Length: 432
Image 1 (cartoon, rainbow, N blue to C red):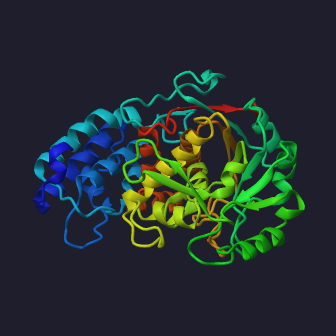
Image 2 (cartoon, rainbow, N blue to C red):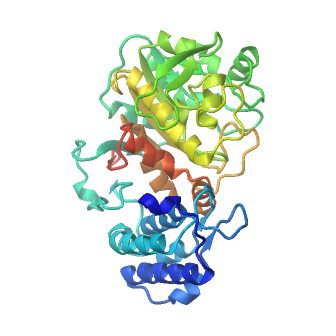
Image 3 (spheres, rainbow, N blue to C red):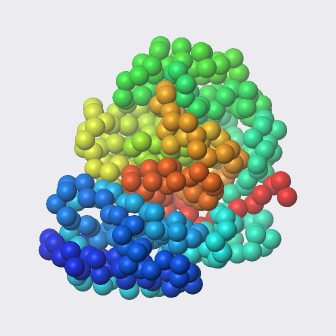
């Protein structure tokens, strides 16, 4: 919105009503559905107002349009709820006009064709570049997007198959990064699922201590949890920050200049990142990027990411946009340190998909059925594909609301912007 973002003029209720009315009219027209009138629809679309002063930011309004354009039906678009994560800017009439002009261009291109559409084989976070190809045309090579391999077989054999599809060979000493899971009942990846893969690469399971307390905040306690959860039975386990922090340079960051990871990070030449994909109370969702940013951060590093570089000692009180962008920036520092992504690969397991993270010892019951396992060399692409598959699944409403409320997709937007990866991907199903 350029200069308009800095204006403090409050949009009148009348203009806000007109804006919502016209935006929804554009959405309805673009998909050819007339069951809802725009006036009826307007009453079902709500913008969050955290500070309760009636302000709606231009950034929020544009974000809800972009989100609606990715949904498969107008009924889903009408149920979107967006929290006002940044109340520092107000929306004026010029902003509203620009949003409507943008919506007119992007919505016809972003709605999936057909009310029963599922996640596309190729997608992009850029509103002007999304393509929805025929599934049979999904290329076997990256082309303009990053390849994400998929299997619906959530077994040790399926995990090995999707990993082997990457045709990637680790060099030197191999670390396998995962979450050991907070007791007593988190949905961490079970050792029996990952054992064959970990042992096939002769990997050491690596983790870092938490910054929020719990059962994994100190090394001795954390190692006990790793033992209790069965990880020490399948491989060596190394708590990377057991001896403190080391620094990684952040190239092109908005909030971070330096990322702090455990000193043992440098002991490994290659990384296999095993992530259980799920929701997250603070980040909206947790996948590959969260696993290499917060997950590899020492206590000091975690605090800096959560606070957008403001605090080395406390993870609390940060700005949400600064947090999401800092995750992407910390993730890029890790990728850059590993040969600019040459010595790291990512696997997301889409099972037990709760809205809560594995750092929650008592997570909510999953609403989404198990989907499969994804693998890629691109952390942005694999997280975007995971989001798309989950959002297209039955029962995903709670996850969608959490991701939207926490502005979780902004991590992917910023990750693409700074060169961590691409939101455009080619989904290759190895089961076919």
